[in-house]
Amino acid sequence: MDETFYAWDYHPNISAGSHIEQYSPAGSTWATMIVGPGTSASSGGTTLGQLFYPYVSSPKWSRMWRSIIRFPTYSLFDDAVISAATLRLRGHSKADPGNNTPQINVYGCTLDNGQGCVLPIAGDFDSIGAVPFCDTPIGYANWNVSGWNEFVLNAAGIAAISLTDWTVFGLREVLYDVAANPPSWYVPSPPETFMRFHGPTQGTVSYRPQLVVTYVGIPTVTTQAVTDISGTTATGNGNVTSLGGSAVTQHGHCWNTTGTPTTADSKTENGAKAATGAFTSAMTSLTEGTKYYVRAYATNSSGTGYGNQVEFTADKGTVYPINPLLRASGIIRTFWAGIGGQSVYQTIITMGGIGTTYVSPISSREPPSAVTPTPPSGAGYLREDYLLWIKQTDWVVIIRMFGHFPSYEEWLEWRQRGLARW
Image 1 (cartoon, rainbow, N blue to C red):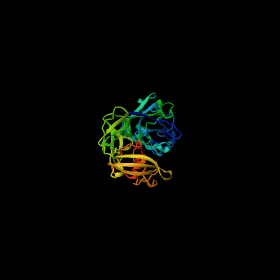
Image 2 (tube, helix red, strand yellow; image 1 turned 90 degrees about the vertical axis):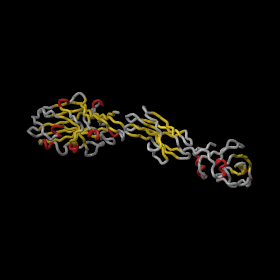
Image 3 (cartoon, helix red, strand yellow; image 1 turned 60 degrees about the horizontal axis):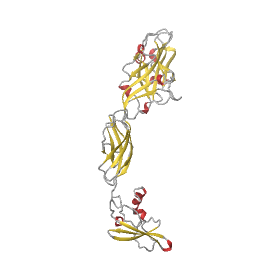
């Protein structure tokens, strides 16, 4: 996919474009002009460009400009793979009174105060490199003063595009500045040799410097809660929110029992996906009572993107705990008033045809203990903690999903999580 970034001064403390000047009031040799820090810096501006002009006496020179442009490429995906990029500058004007036919090219730039949101300083004059980021500089004759001048970036230029910070480019004259070869001196009337372009404070986007980046990234995926859970199967739910710039060749869900699953773990393979949107996966071969960690995934030519992690526990099925009290096959409940008017439940729990009577004081949360119906105030069996009721005298089968002998605390937690249906 293509994304266009603009050099735009949208904040007074942010400069997306600058020209850095080397100025010698008394004139200097060309060799002196092109080395060392500059003398001043100007942020923004409606026009930027490359400029030099001579001093009044030969062979001295009085002034030189270099330009710096910054683009907010940190919004790219951190894993984006850039295949191409073009720097586009909208031409403004040009002049070549000394017939030196200058050329402009793009170079790297490491700013003295960092690549981010800072204003330029004079010292940035020598922060621009000399390794070209475009294999074809634009010469004076081809400089378009009413349209776009395009620099197709080479491998070095593409590598300089930051995925996490501002991308900074410098522009220099090629034949005389970078090559350290003095241009032909001329009488400074008019004085300026320049090739200018519209800067970041130009009023409309159609004139501001642009960086067009072609890239692909891994897909963006989200994971939703697992549904239709049984002892050995479940349904994974996910959503591909971005294809990442290239075709999704595989997608599905992956899971394990330790966390942060990848496609190296158990997974579904739902095949290619031509568009963004929700999808489901049939997860199979699960183990009853096991906790699983799940992530949706999608793969394209750049790699595999994973969604957030969700977890679930495979259904533990119908089991009969070791404790005989929990192997009850049915219950009969009666209600009666105890000594002093205390209300109690009398519960007969049937195990294999043998009935055992338990007493349950109201609001008791004590573990069950076998007691006789009298006295009614002892530790009792509270039916809400352990038994599933339908009606007062109905026989029911206790469904329990542990697979091991549960503690009292485990049972309460199971009920509080809403897994019990009372």
